[in-house]
Length: 372
Ligand SMILES: Cc1cc2nc3c(=O)[nH]c(=O)nc-3n(C[C@H](O)[C@H](O)[C@H](O)COP(=O)(O)OP(=O)(O)OC[C@H]3O[C@@H](n4cnc5c(N)ncnc54)[C@H](O)[C@@H]3O)c2cc1C
Image (cartoon, rainbow, N blue to C red; front, side, top):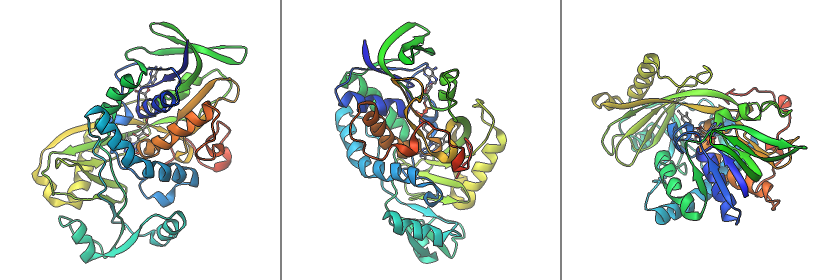
């Protein structure tokens, strides 16, 4: 029997499996498709929430913990696997500075670097900008990671560490007896396990249906496009009115993203393509000269105020959840995997687990998928 079975091979499931294995547990990860193909692949890899001052403290706490850990984690993974996730600190330039007072107060409180910069400095950071504003917010410590490469590295790393990874096996039900989880039913038969972790992203709520607790996680579609630009065209992560550019080391530039409440529909639309490319070219006009190489959509696991559920099921012993990371699963994933492992293994937790517990969240005043 496996000690821990993790359901879902997105970033959250893979990081959770890794943490549990590092602690010495026997771990099995089961994914219904290929690992790392859903929301975790579709994301931008920005290692900060957009407009981070808009989020509640529990999201900030996870983000700050992860941001400290990412450089070491990324270089360790690169040396262990030969796949470099390209952790890159190129800073975040926020062109709509209307919330500057709140942003500066937040930065002071949490100890983040955030400067108010004027047109000349803005252009020094990003020379290709069209009509730079008089003021912008500059966060020099914000980094990014190339999420598809991070997932490829984990795909090599997990089996090498001894995690049993099973792809193309769908979990069809949880086996619960006398208030305790005993394993799962899969499309290939039953697997018994001491503990089960649901890390199935936007699909997590479905798996838990009928167990006396309704997980408030709902899909929120995000579409993204990719310009095949050349290195140096865009240097910083640039954010304006909810639209952003993320320059990769090879010159490609991601432009994202939409926020759509359309259920489990992952199709892309012509309207989004037109709007994302319009917004990108309005920021950096030279992008109009480059081909849009790709256009895709992913389903974010939306949760109330973007606060993920990390903890044990209130009615089923041995059943744990790590889901609902909404727009920030890449940045907060490292901390949430560590915290889930701490809770499951009854270790001293790296952060206070109370805000992430599986309890009714109506009191915090926002529903699943409501973007901060
Ligand atoms: C367009 C877009 C941009 C984003 N940008 C960023 C960003 O810049 N920074 C950031 O931090 N975050 C970003 N995100 C959010 C981030 O990608 C998500 O929060 C994160 O990937 C969630 O990871 P996950 O592992 O929970 O979900 P997923 O990656 O969706 O993984 C869940 C997995 O569970 C599997 N699964 C589901 N049901 C079953 C079952 N019954 N049996 C077996 N397996 C099952 C699925 O197949 C899937 O592989 C973005 C997301 C999108 C869509």
